[in-house]
Length: 89
Image (cartoon, rainbow, N blue to C red; front, side, top):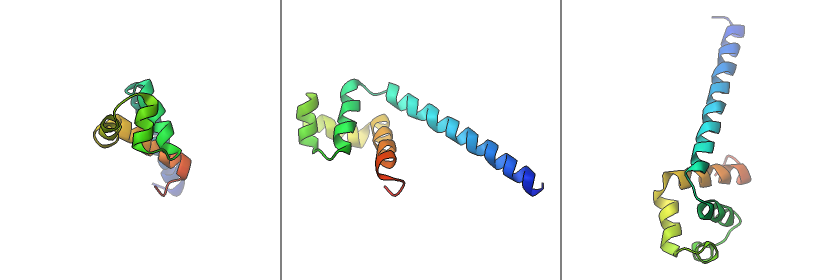
């Protein structure tokens, strides 16, 4: 395959990857409730788990559970961290 063919294939593959990322992102959001989405926003601006829990109306252990054991919450939080703070997080 020549260089042009290789570049074309890479662009097609890159487009597919971006489409999958968008789909996963939307799936993550639909798997989270309003309190979880609000908690993510509050975590991103530097609030403690205790403060976040009180603000959204859940126990601190619930926020901790979301952060450590809910794959959708973890994925969305990590995605948003990268979006806000850059790819180095």
